[in-house]
Amino acid sequence: MAIEMTIPEISWMRRVIPEGETDYDWVNETSRDLFAGKRVVVFALPGAFTPTCSSTHLPGYDSKYESMKEQDIDEVYCLSVNDSFVMNAWFSSLGIQNVKPIADGNGNFTRHMGMLVKKEAVDFGYRSQRYSMVVDNGRVEMIFVEDGKEDNFAGDPFDISDAESMLNYLTAVRDVRREEIERAANQEDAQDSTDS
Image 1: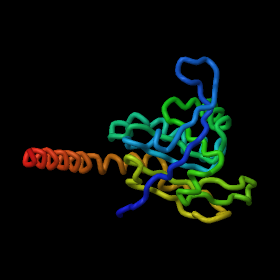
Image 2: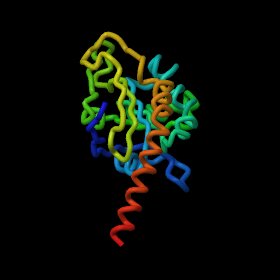
Image 3: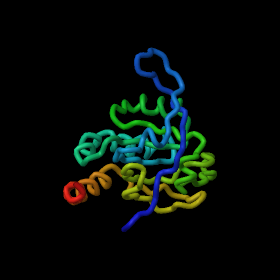
């Protein structure tokens, strides 16, 4: 399936301890900072501290982090429509060591991705649809969107955006992707030789 989708240009304020500092401060991050020149995995979920997100989704990606990096992935991010304080507390409470948070508190990234849905039946307001994707230099390479992408959907499907499904995809395309990159580099070298 061909996907013609790019990542929206968004900025977030992230609460972190800047390098060389001892106290938390606000740091501006942009989608360019996270995605330009990198191949990353992003998985999005409805909310921090919620059952499936806490028991399986986030811990699953954290445990498979190194295996994903072996598949030519530069970084793994967890996105939720929560503020940075909540995301930091949630990651800390679960002992997350590898996955990095994206606190999309205003829902701007999620809205521009077409993934912002209402979860009013459980008093969540606007949240992200559950999905995962591979982003290569700002272009969506593959996306796995769970069923029920509609406002106030009654269920919370968790069948295709999990870490194991993502790792299966990455493993399946790794060799073909590497061959294509090598072929393109060889063609570029040959073109450069003929131009000289």
